Length: 379
Image (cartoon, rainbow, N blue to C red; front, side, top):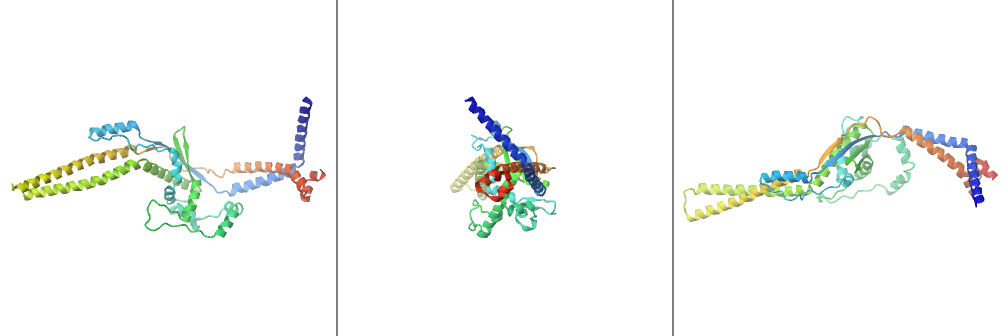
């Protein structure tokens, strides 16, 4: 048993030595492949588009029991009864990326005017990425389009221009449609604006990537403002709808109360010296109507103030830990890393070819491979 293990170990050592000898014999070929890969890496590093990343850190805070009880005490002193905290439904930060990727958010972000160095006036984001007058020539983009992306170009040419379905006129505002340009830009924005949740630190990181530092900072700031706006809208949606309903009833009751007051005052002016039974009955009826309208109006005044307190109470507060700043250094391309990566991959590719080509030559019997690797033909 020990003899067999020893033989296996010797065979493994012989195979390893043989592989090292093969690699050493073909070291010039490996160096050539590595050099070619390094040159490709240099070209990629030099011609890759510059990208700048602007970011901010946000810590959202939601009012809970303590704040509710304090506001409830103040309201009770004023004669209002807040009752239970029905509107304090927690909005999970896990939904923030979904909000960021939603169609209304993206469509509003597309309309952001961005100031670029080459242009005097700010340009809307959707115009900058869809109109030909703002498109710049990119060597790497062109190479990627007509190499890796060539099948997509061919398929798109075969299919032709696709029309975007449009909804009927006067359609409900809850139905959203996207134009071809908007749909295209949405895919671009997914890679430009991103959000990262940190459960341990309890904060949110919002980043924006663009070709210019100032433009990246403007986009990050707009995304921050929109995120706060949408989160606040979702958080207070229930209590805000209650406030809107009460506001409508309040306006109606106020108008009705004022009308009843005016009717009662006119009746009194017209019948101040009259003591007939009909006049007294009419006066009592109008007085009763004024009192009822006054009671409803006063109750709605209390409910209105109560609803306003609830909206204020449930409005989230966002603490900006790290505000948006204009980046001084580019985030991409990392030219040194690109060159090292291509060189490393070139070395691996050269070693792989040296080890794989003899096997392929032996299986296929290809003459060119045999001439290229003489040791294969000798075998």
